Image (cartoon, rainbow, N blue to C red):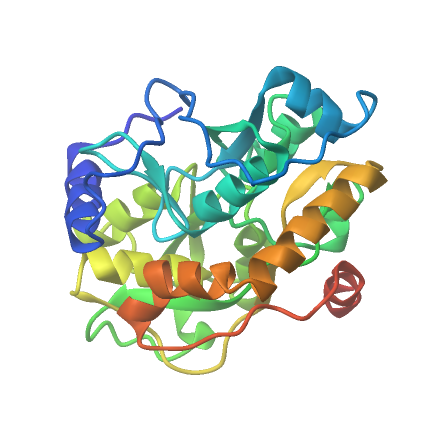
Length: 302
């Protein structure tokens, strides 16, 4: 894993202060993943058969969830409290609470999310992972829990007005993300800089080694919260990105369980509360929980 540079840690600390999240969260995230304090259990926790994934997790008394550590506001490591926080983390806590177990959050960057699922490093990935047919050949997905849009970030006054202006420019995105292929297709003459983490893209545009960053709008919004010298390029979105929770392919019972937790999370108002906490209060926008199914997302991406 590449070492986080001081400027990135500084900006994450600024973000933590902006979000008012520099304390008061009892989730641990230190030392390569860290265990979490117990999630508040539901009043009555259903006990699942020992042969199911849910039963095995309950026997361990812990669910291991792969999340981003450097993608505010979806998943980031608070540099003051060492807690892992964000929209994805809140949903992960809801999954853990439904099972009556502790959540353990480990870092899952774009390039190792699927290997972590396949080799059993994690039980679940909630890591801004877009549902697409290629990934669905390797892992299972929940229904979409968030819909993002593909956009471009530049320094204010950078002169980029659309994807066509990326020709000849240095553009950063993350290795293993959907944008690696999107940019090759939509901006074939751009000079791609592929890195491990989005914090490296943020540092690169700040120090001028790249002229643009391309990824999901909500991830780019997190960068703007950290640095108001940056702006989103106006115009049409590059892509539609439905985020899904990832798990081992073929685990139908676990998929049904996770979709049930998601349905309850959305209908109870918890999804809306998390959206306002992590996104709405900074963007000024409102968004409803997704209504698309996994089949809808795969069909749209085909």
